[in-house]
Length: 572
Picture 1: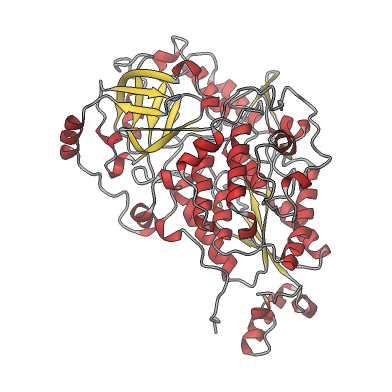
Picture 2: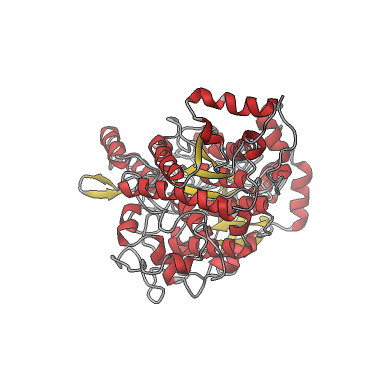
C-alpha cells in the first residue's frame, strides 16, 4: 500500500489534535494498535425501524465488520438519514437529495479510507451512492435483500404489485377488509425489501450491474444466510480496494452506466431507475441524457419473468441463478472493459456461475419473454423535455391511443372526484394529473399510476392511459406516462391541459401530443397562475428553489459534481 491513508491525517498525528482524535475513540474500548495505520472502513448504515425494509441491518453491519477485521482493517459503523418508502410523507423522494448530503458529508468529514454502503429500501441506494460518488473513496455496496415470496390462499403474491390488485378487489367487492388485513401479513412475511422487481430490487440490480457489489449480491433474499456471507466478503474486499486505491470513480465510467441501462431493460426494472441513475451520473461527472435510456435500453428484450412485468418474484430469481445469468445472456451487448469492485470485469466475475436453473423465470436472449422491453422516452408539445413509459408493464393495445382528457388539478382533486359516479369518464379517456412533479408536490411522489374510477373497474376494465409529472412505484403496472418535463408547477404545457382536450400517445413513434394549437396554448399560458411555493423555510424551501427537472435526475443543482475527499482544517 503505497498511497498514504487519509485516516492518518486524524489518527497518525503526534500533536494536540492527534490526542483528541484517538483518545475519545478509545472510550469504546479500542486498543492503541487499532490506530497503527490500518485502513479505516466506514460502514454507512441506513438502518431504521421506520424503514421496515432496512430494519435488519444491524446483523449485516456486524457481518461486514467481521470481514473488515479479518482483512486487517478498522471498521466503524455510522448512521445516516434513512428513507422509508412506505411511511415517509409526503414522499421519500423529497428527501433523497438530503440523505445524499448526509452521506457525502459524513464520509468526507470523518477519518475514513473506504466505505461500505448498507442499502435496501428504494431511495437508500441512490442517495448513498450519490453521496459516496461526490467524495470519491473506495466504495462497495451491500444490498439488504428482498423479502421471501408472499403467499395467500395458495397463491404467490408480490409486495407492492398486489397492493394495487387488493385495492381494486375491495372496490369491486371481490375482497373484504378482513381478508385484506390477512393478506397484508402474508405479503410481508420476512425481513427485506419488496420482492417484486420494484424500485428496491431494481436498485439492487443497478448497483450490481454498475459493478459496485460483489457478483451475485442483488437477488439473495434478506433472510438467506448467504446474504450475511456476502456482507462479510464485502467487508474483506473493501480493505483490499483501499490498498489497491480502487476508488468509485474508476468503477462508475460511461461504460458502466451503459451496461446498467441495458441490464435494467432486461430485468424489467422500475422507471424510477432513470431518475436515480441520472442523478448518480451527475455526481460522478458522466453525461447521461434521457435519450440514452431509449437508445440503449428500449430494444433490449425482457429476460426476467418477475412481477409486475411477469409472474415470479426475487426469491425465484435467486434460485434460477440471479443476475449473473442475465449478464451472461447480455454478454454481446455489454461493455467488457469495465472494472467492478472485484478488480475484474463482469465476464470474469461470473465465469462458472451462469447456469440457469429455471427457464420459466429467466429466458435466453434468443427466446425472450418480450422482444423489446426497456423504458421508452416520448416527446411532443405536452412533454418538450420528454416523458417516460415502461412498455413491459403497460397494455399493448393502449400504446397507440388518442383520447379525451379528464383532468385532475391536484392529488386532492383526484382523491375527491375519482369515484364520483357523476365523473364524466369512460375507458377511452386519458387521465391527467397535474402538480405532482419535483416542485409541484413537492418531491415527485409515486402517484402516476392513478387508480381507475370504481365505475370503470366494475366494467372489468383494468387499464387506461394515465399521464402525470409524477412517478410510479416500480411494483406497479399500467399504461402510465410519467416524469412529464417541464413539470406543470413551473409552467410546462401539462399545466395547460383542459377537460375535453384530445391527447395522442404513440409509443412506437415516441410521440405525446396535445391536440391544441399553439395560439390557444399561448392564450392559456398567459392566463395561467404559478402556484405558491410549497414552503418558505427549511429544507423543503431549499429543495423547491434548486431541484432540477425529472429529465435531469431531480438532483439539487448545487450538488452536481464532486468535491473530493480532502478536508484541510482541523476542529480544534
